Length: 182
Image 1 (tube, rainbow, N blue to C red):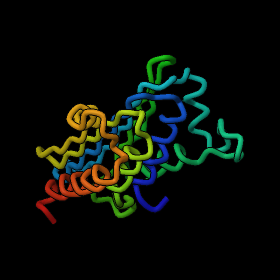
Image 2 (image 1 turned 90 degrees about the vertical axis):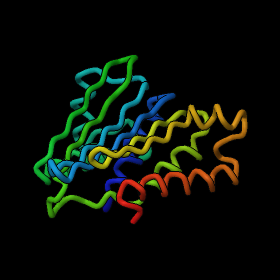
Image 3 (image 1 turned 60 degrees about the vertical axis):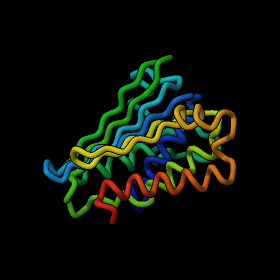
Image 4 (image 1 turned 45 degrees about the vertical axis):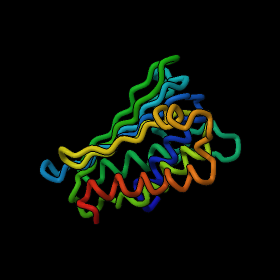
């Protein structure tokens, strides 16, 4: 994968497959401490210790359409190659948290990519799920919570064309403002 946003999409798809109803995605950019943290937390089925070890193996997958599961191992390697860190914490019946820390200025760190597009796709293609997207740059923060959006929309689906267009703009503008409106 060429960008971190696609790793996030892949991990979120794992959460969806694990029957999560709430997926929280946090991106924290901290140039001062030279770190970029990505956390994906869900309330899905969770995994026992043995399965957590297996998902780090690229030759393990629960999918029947292919024989390898490269998503998590590639995400882990992307973090570690920048001097970062990677952890998975999971509890059966509670959910899973995937944490990746990257060296922010490291030459091998992949770009974040189209994170607004990925979050927009996750939200509009999974109307029955809730997502909380939090993006921080140092002390500034942008949060998009579908539970709040659904409450305000009073039954109008997030996949509605007008709502979808607004959502895409909302995400792009919120993230852009964190970077000085660039």
